[in-house]
Length: 89
Image 1 (cartoon, rainbow, N blue to C red):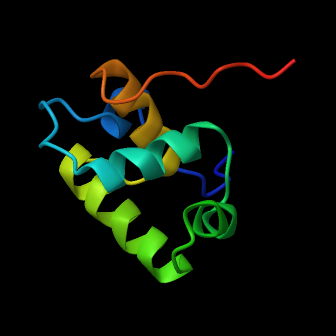
Image 2 (cartoon, rainbow, N blue to C red):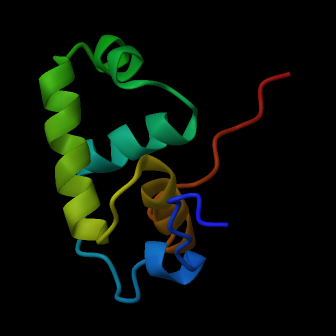
């Protein structure tokens, strides 16, 4: 039965090359994404506009060779760019 959903192998979501160097503000955004913050929450935390958050995320995506927040965080973790956030008790 064809549901119209295309199944793509997981490996196609992850880059095969080493990422370009991220700027400190791009790393900071990825760390907050890894903590589960949304763009509006990140903007409020950093006292910057949502547009600036979006722009920094797009630059980080391009440098990491990814297309989603989840893959960006996983790739940054794999390459030691960010560390997992501390668990809150």
